[in-house]
Amino acid sequence: MSLPPPGPNQAYCEVSALDGGQFALPLHFFIDPPPPGPATSSPAPSLCWYIRHASDPQKHLVFDLGLRRSFERYPPAVRAFAGMCPLSVDSEFPVRDTLARGGVRAEDVTTVCLSHVHWDHVGEAALFPNATFWVGAGARPLVEGGYPAAADAVIAQDYVPLAPGRAAWLDPAAAGWAPLGPFPRAWDAWGDGSLYVVDTPGHVAGHLALAVRTSARGDWVVLSGDCAHDRRLISGEAQIAVVRDEHGQVMFCGHEDLGHAKETIEWLRRVGDEGQGRVKVILQHDVEWWEANGRGEGGAFWPGKITYA
Image (tube, rainbow, N blue to C red):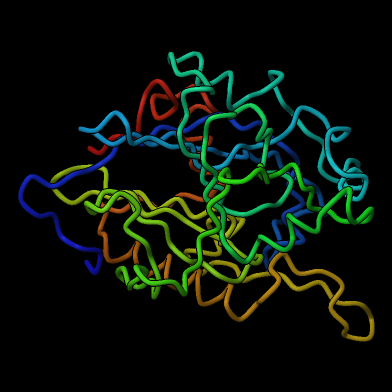
């Protein structure tokens, strides 16, 4: 496969899923052809991840922070979605509480990486007071100019800590980003080939994925954020839906840049196919993976971890 092979004494990470809550995902807006039957919303997870370096306890991070408890804690423009995407959050702060069940305090997390700054991935940044936030540079103007500075914005300024030194705005055009397998731009975050931040354009400005080496023998997990909202987009069984009005004008598309979104999905398809079972590609709203792993109760969820046969 095109991902780099392991070297001597290869560094790697352990990856555990975190419960970020669930919500109703209207798949007929996201995949074409849509699921059979009337247009309805399907329960979907907002998966988050806890990643630890296997030999260096100082290197650990949380990838995405899931849902807030209620739409009342989002900007007014987001609250309008409440009827379409009702939330199902089992605890006050699902990611913090899931970490705590495995003995990790939110205060001890040193890095939070956000795949992007949409409402269903940002959780409560204030719960992680000692973490540096890694965020795609393209999201910076969206956050800094967000609600309440812009009353109608769907992105809020509190999605990312804006105090000096709290956010690292990662720019894929900067030095140090290089090709990784089929992906044109990736950053070796810990400098030892164990964790790569990957530029995955198309869904929204600043979108990032993670490619995580999970063994010394050549296993990987690619955590792909919202590059795709359903596994059928990766398999080729469905295409990205574009909802048009009677005049052919686009009313809704789940991705800001459809061309780049299609290209990114093709990169994910390639890396999964090349891996021949040694590369797991997981979506942040991956209903199939979520159900196969006990809807949050399986062994891949913290304090368990993803394993290979």
